[in-house]
Amino acid sequence: MTVPVHPICHRALHVHLTNIELAKIGDDPPKLRVQAGLATFLRWVANKPPDFHAPTRRKR
Image (cartoon, rainbow, N blue to C red; front, side, top):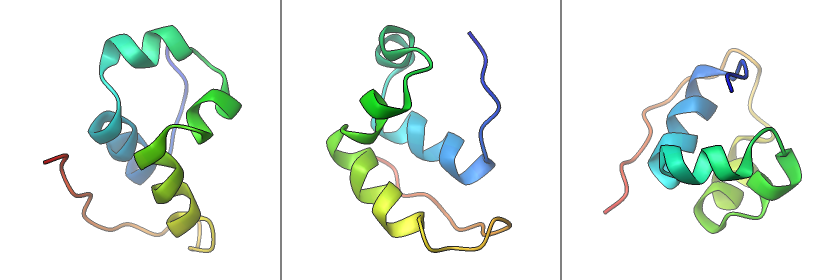
């Protein structure tokens, strides 16, 4: 399944979740929002403008 996602959000998804995990979750935003690292990112990015771009940290 392919879903259009903002570039910074796309990078964050792949930093915090594997492709297999994303496939299991599917197109279900509530399930994505409760993922620990992703939830932190979403709180941080929530008040940024729509054209906001920033480097995404890689998982350690």
